[in-house]
Image 1: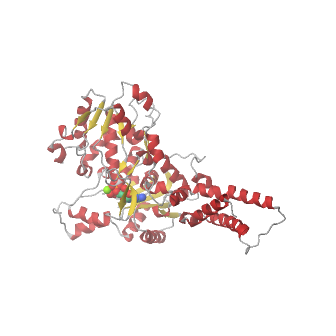
Image 2: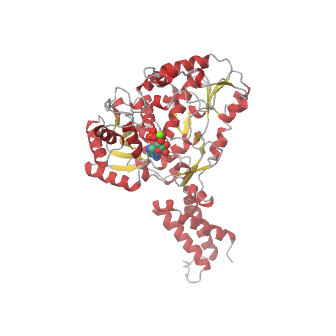
Image 3: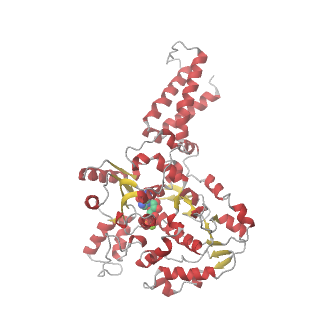
Length: 506
Ligand SMILES: Nc1nc2c(ncn2[C@@H]2O[C@H](COP(=O)(O)OP(=O)(O)O)[C@@H](O)[C@H]2O)c(=O)[nH]1
Ligand SMILES: [Mg+2]
């Protein structure tokens, strides 16, 4: 009779072997397979087992040693995949992250302190792409920090109805993700830089506990129609009006009414008006001390060889707590990162062309060499063929157009560009075609894409943040002028003093 532990080991091995992630690591295939053969041979008389002069006990000991040395580390390395297999492939809920958010080190002190003031923007953005949500979080955090209040953070919410999962184009995604799965640093409660006495950020639940009856402010108390719609009103004017408003409130507990529109509505982000905010944002720790989460850092380390050719990456780096120290804001020499925005942008770019839409927020800095002249002969809901072609070339470029731009940017770059990372939501086959065309256009040490990443199940649903981290650190970045995701990358690069002209656009 086979022992229970024998059956368990076999089941674990089978799980391990049937997981597709295993096949990218050839070393992990043969070891468990061989172990399995050896284990099977104990119960299967058809496969004679060589003893090599070992006693029965010796063989068992050897098997145990093999399991401990090879199979267990393999399972540990692919622990997300294994866990996922046993939990029926449901998206992760990031419970440990949520738990930690509820118990940050400074809460105890803040609970009894009378000096801490809070700002909870309960009207924060949700149900849209991470780029738009991040822009909103940046503005809310900037307002909290500039008024000396603790920023109150919430989840990245795709569906705010209390469900755990959402059907997104036929597959399940988490309805909400704790912000600490995406971000680290001051926006999720990290320490302020030395000398900055602004109170640290707290979670929404903590705020609700210490502020059961906050002063609620409606956005219409400050924003009038002129501020919202008049394109000659800079965003800094709106911001200053809000500084006045929040600073006039004595109550330590302030909440922006959850049903209010955003203070900075989406059309303000799609206009030069937004650039006036830079004088507040550029020196704020919200941008200068921006940080990604340990989960994203982990994903970076696991895939470092994709962003840094010839990087030494050891097996143990895939496990949490790598010994290698990485500076997550240092530039990656020689790396050219491309933001190739596909998917919904196929139709969206046509829509942008028809309405003669301008580029997004921080893609519009006047010191950039790639600028966009919004056509003045475009109409409302329709435009000329020539204008549309221009929109498609810059918003949804073909492979030839991408290659042409890459060649030009490489020639113009002050620093040598040696390898390429394509960040994209494009289809695998199309990305392979693009890689081939780029390979044929020049001598690159390496060309990789988002589709080459080896990521865990938890990392899968926040992987856009890994792409942003890489783009933020690339020597030169080519982005999509209309994309909020590009604009956030450019904003971080500008805050961290990358040369303005290392930001290029299709
Ligand atoms: N991983 C990855 N995802 C992307 C990329 N570009 C777009 N996406 C996905 O598509 C969404 C785009 O929406 P958003 O962030 O609002 O940016 P925008 O639509 O380009 O302004 C992101 O949240 C990602 O999920 C990319 O380069 N890499
Ligand atoms: Mg979007």
